[in-house]
Image 1 (cartoon, rainbow, N blue to C red):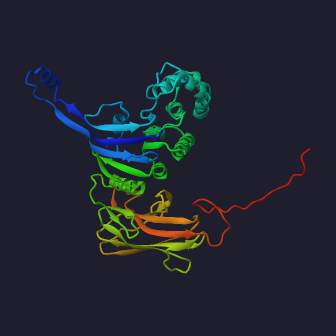
Image 2: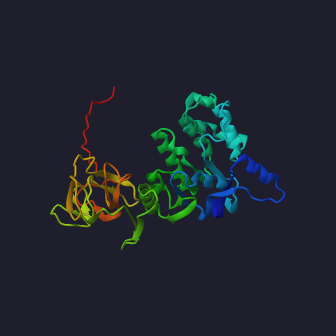
Image 3: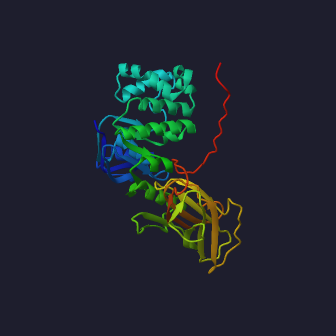
Length: 412
């Protein structure tokens, strides 16, 4: 069966009373006079996820992401609106949700499996796979109260995904635990996607959202602020982190149809940018392994005592390939004055695989843009890399090996 999700005008409100006395008076008052203030956590949320699609939900803490997933899965009741889901659903919301601390991992696996619609016989059949994927060893027969948070996540994910669901809903639970199991979990999610599972995922992991999802939604203040490609939504999210109130953040459509996010106070801006080839000429196409120079010209519009210039190279999905800045390279920029123009040259071998890449630039103080963001510009430059002279290889990086083989004679 194909899974799908449809959310229509969904909203969640809570009543805030000034005191316990006001709550009691409202309950007892024959007139039914309201003595509370209505606080909307979510309002007017509408979107759909078609069979086989993957939707990412992004937002700062308190934006309403976890509440939205609880409304969708039915663990909390909506104030208004509706949710329509088709297919067998597996959800990972809160870490170890539903686990009893005094029961063993195996006992909890049976209980959690039945909650997602598996029979006891099915769980028994799947138990070897659950144990193998969770990799918690003898702890499977120990009480869950002795588990670390990472072990709880391993078991919960192994149970929720023991059988491929039609719809998989994942909250930030996967951010807990070791990097090895996170990679393993996302590989299973990608495999499910390839087989047709519909996916709804909340994560601050930019790479995960951009590599798995078709679309993304930015939640802000309990409402859908924007919906679009994962790259443009993550760019806007990062800009909003710097501009806490969302001021001075704008998005523009470039000539090639991509959406460019620009944010910052404008006290310093990138006037021009180019990627120069080995002859020192601006070019849009470069060969793998060739020497290039990123030329960035900066216009200064105000006196700035502390200025840093940084850049990121991103692949076609918007995932970071490499990034650095003058601060981390130990290249201090003296205080600059209004009206100055600065020219920076970053030279390096272009050890990238064939494909399309973009450059994002950042002008800020100290080591990052979260304090003083003068300008953050995504898609400041787009260029192409081609393999013109090297042997065939795969991937986004050219890591050409030298091969040695030693023969030790025939085996005895």
